[in-house]
Amino acid sequence: MAQVELIMPKMGESIMEATILKWVKNVGDTVEEDETILEIATDKVDSEVPSPVDGTIKEVYFQEDETVEVGKVIALIATEGEEATPQASPSVKESSEEAPSHSDNGSEPQPTSRPPAPEPEPAVAEASAEPQRTGSGNRFYSPLVRTIAEKENISMQELEQIDGSGLQGRVTKKDILAYVEQRGQQQPQPKTEPVKKAQPARQPQQAPAPSATANGNTEIIEMDRMRKLISEHMVNSKRTSPHVTSFVEVDVTNIVNWRNRVKKRFQEEHGEKITFTPIFMEAVARAIRDFPMINISVEGQTMIRKKDVNIGMAAALPSGNLIVPVIKNADHLNLMGLTKKVNDLARRARENKLSADEIQGGTFTLTNVGTFGNVMGTPIINQPQVAILAVGAIRKKPAVVETAYGDLVAVRHMMYLSLSYDHRVVDGYLGGSFLRRVGDYLEDFDHEQTI
Image 1: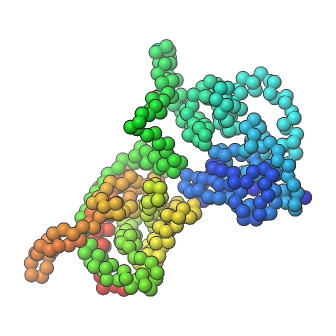
Image 2: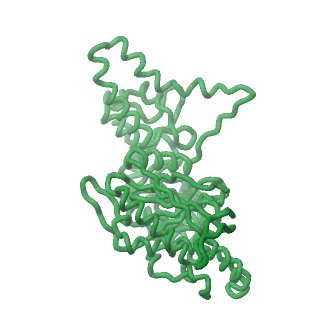
Image 3: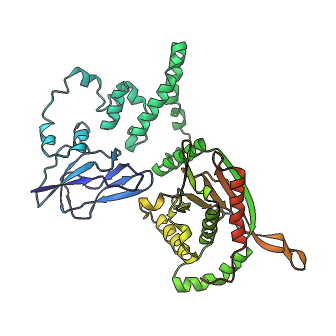
């Protein structure tokens, strides 16, 4: 008989925890090596956790929708054909209290020895802090939420009033911490007007209720998990960085003519399309080398200059949400290398097959609002970066062209570039000069080159 601990895997350098979305296998189920046991999610990407061995699920130590630190034991697998009796565990039985101890320990005797021991339940302290489940709603609270509630002296009645954003309306760690923060901000108010201020303190909790009563002309749509993350990320960026946006218009006629000339042959030889994105990437990478202080991040009063040029490209998913895969060391790749990398990341982004490492570590971001037919945009900075470039739609326009015989008016392919930057550390000179340099590289594109 042998037992193998299933560990919450590390999903990337900066990712320290993950949320359990769904247990694909339950206690007592048999699994084969590399078969998916559960699905997890981080603030970057969703993923599946496979079984490291053949065996039977003996214990699971965390509920769906619980957030677990990287490196914690999340399940126990019995090997060598041992049949594991399906026993109550935190992921199956709501009243179980073993989750905190199993997550650290994972030893086998505790599940069988703890349930028969009812001593803690009659205790007065345990009974009053009854956050194992709610009174009327019977809503489950994870051990982590119960611990925070007990620490912050949040009663069961208060806990029931918190709106949960988790699975089946469960209160998550973020929900209760947000409530604690809001409650802390309301503490000073009751001192001056205890009666008056106590009433409004509960009103915000029930403010969403009227919107839930929809009539025939309205529809209430709950944000999905990714949309909630994007929303939080965008609000945080605007709160963190004072945004300034600069614009330039560039003549990309040489680029358009060159692409029209080579795209058919390129697809025949390489089996894929060549788009404008790698050309924009190349110009951005060259401009970053010229203005390295655009390739930084901010921590407090400190600026951190990044020597690696890792360019993220905002990509739209079939769901309508956005994801930003990153091309690492983009300044080391030629146009062919950038083309293949852009196509590969864009394809796998649409198929939801990106790894966590491929969507982090960016130092600058490029977004193409022109794909939606937009002439220009004012993008929001992708924190902790300090700048983001938006490229607009390419349109034919009359423009003045300087020639050896004087100025002429001709039909040219024109495009707007817009750069949003963090005015704490990027002033108008740096932001404007960088943007103009990107435009110059695009206008000076060698339309005679081969690929």
